[in-house]
Amino acid sequence: MELPVVVQQALGDNAPGVSFRSVSQIDTGHLLRMVLLSDDQGNLQAICRRNDMLDLEALNKRLGRDLRMMQRREQVRVRQKAGLQELPALPSLTGWPTVVDRRVDELEAVALELGEQDLGLMMPAEDFRQLT
Figure 1: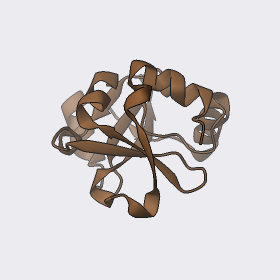
Figure 2: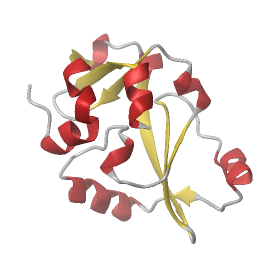
Figure 3: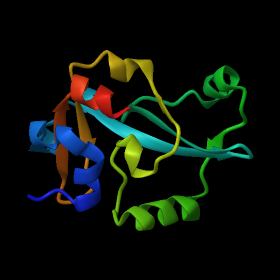
């Protein structure tokens, strides 16, 4: 499968180091998700493991902000602007400030769901850290 151009661009020099797997074959502890947030100061994206809860209250306290989940229609607009059905957890897709959960930093490898054909993109965590 060929990666969408915007995903290839977001991966940059790390694109050759990725491999494809069926999402059902990936340990769910390695799957990441991107949560789109906003407040009166602007937009922010948080990246965490797919099954982890994002502690929005703690994040707001730490950042001194009042972030909320972005409105659904605004999320759709962001995805359409990127030309993707789903946004994989790649910070440069939006260009917004990014917060990465500390548990992501503990992983040896990460997986990003592409949202198409049940495929995930596996990459070494070190390569992912370079993207953030």
